[in-house]
Length: 107
Image 1 (tube, rainbow, N blue to C red):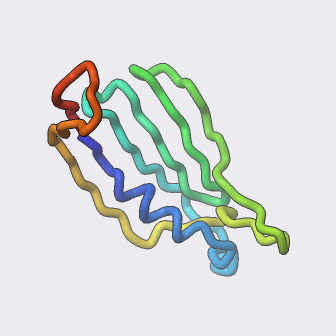
Image 2 (cartoon, rainbow, N blue to C red; image 1 turned 90 degrees about the horizontal axis):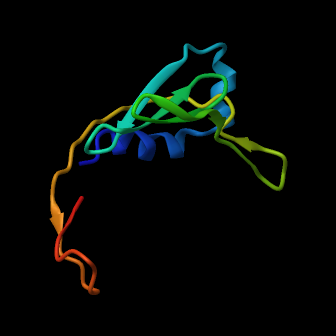
């Protein structure tokens, strides 16, 4: 089961320096969890775009910035903003083409 997978897909095209033209922004947090809920990834959007990873409530990675500097010096990811959020859940089984330990893999 993937919860909130569309959040990350929606953030990637929005990591643009254009957001800085609109003044200070409120920080918003978006979470994606593993099917069991043990693994949680939180993407925080504000003046700096960051992500955090936790396993069973214990922090594995805290507020790591997400950005990319292009050849012309443009920083993609600075002052990002979210314009749309969609949530979805997936609970399906996949039958692998190559032989594996299991004949079905739960996605």
